[in-house]
Image 1 (cartoon, rainbow, N blue to C red):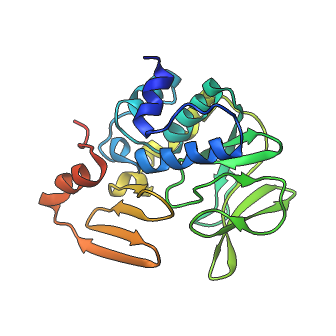
Image 2 (image 1 turned 90 degrees about the horizontal axis):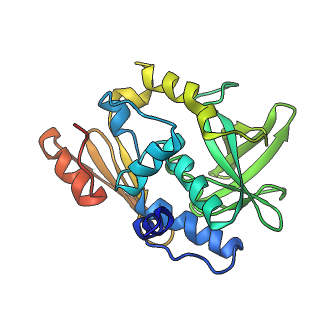
Length: 249
């Protein structure tokens, strides 16, 4: 089997016959269900890489990762399948104003350009039309692109109000270009990546999601979210039960 075949098997997806929006949406959703967004290597001080082969080995081998790994691997898969892909650098705005590139996202060119992302945690789960004005269905909520001289901002509608998530310019990058950002975030002792472990992924169809935090498990099914306390001694068992992963080391 080729690496592409193994990757598709990992996410439970078939090789698409036609490279259209439906195929792209199926692949994005399949990845979000199968591959967790997680920080276990960074939390446990295991070096992370933006080398393409290393990233692929980690994701195909059963782990998840953060944006540089999940989107780094997924962009490669899309390219190998024949999609026209551009890797984009973005500045995350969740904690306030920011102009430093610290996120890797993906543009895919079909009949128009779409933003695709499998490395931003609890975010949009279907391709978003980059040339469309106004809110559009992102799966869990409406999302919207807001243009400015500084770039394009992705905003999620929360209680009807657009809240900025990250800002980007549509400029092509190589995966290796994110090495500095990856190292900087890995080394920052105050960043949440280093302070507590987490893992999250979609559950089946729709926007249902499981999230394992340092001390609790969150299950969102429809409009209902249930939280269960997780003792430190039970954390590894919960990680295996919901994500089929063990901590590194």
